[in-house]
Image (tube, rainbow, N blue to C red; front, side):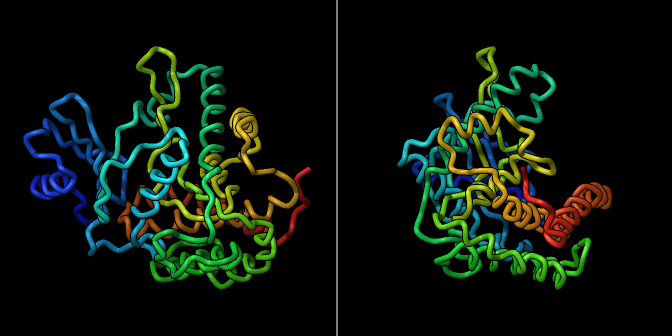
Length: 331
């Protein structure tokens, strides 16, 4: 297990580089839930708070695409602010291997789920759809990870995503991940459908980690509202459809009518048609490969490993079966 907590002196030095003296700090508490970066809530004497996020120690084993992940997060937040896209934190200071951002209100959705009525859930999912549509207005000129962890950005999505898949499959082999098929078979199945990626011609900054735990719900006013979307470190320039994978994690996003209605009402660019089925299967496969491969470097307990594999191995197998069988397109 690698120690991700920071010493007081490290935190003080990071804050000092941002122009914040230690005597302005009333509390520095490490936040739970993450397994990669170190995240602290920094309470200040003026009653406000900031969030400090720092990269893991250099000795911690990581997947190939995970080098320099914080660059993607600061890029997304900075571009969102410049384009007046709502729902994400503002970067206060970027220190490269760490950064400070504003604190958004609310708690992760799973912590308040039981307190929400069905009508509130539907309204909130519509609001999430509108926020994600706003994020998908952030476009660029090339495809791939902003950190260049897998090499330079690519001119085509097919090239970029092919490199992303190859990197995680190599990691899966290196870390001995439990997969439903050998990595070589998965390479063949995914490569056979690479032409579907040519439909994507505009690079969009995709969050790619919009599961419920990264959606904040603020109930402080009595009426629940979306406090914001966080943890954008997994962002890449790619197909906005890829965000629908984590938004419907281990489920079918087509069943989330409230989200889709909100997304479309706000001008979201994704169309769920026959052509998107294969792409969704490819993106689900990519995410599930990451979820299975990270088990070893994140030092999951045996019980955590069993739970993750029990949920994800069959899900990955189903996507690969779809790619193999070329099931009928969505009606």
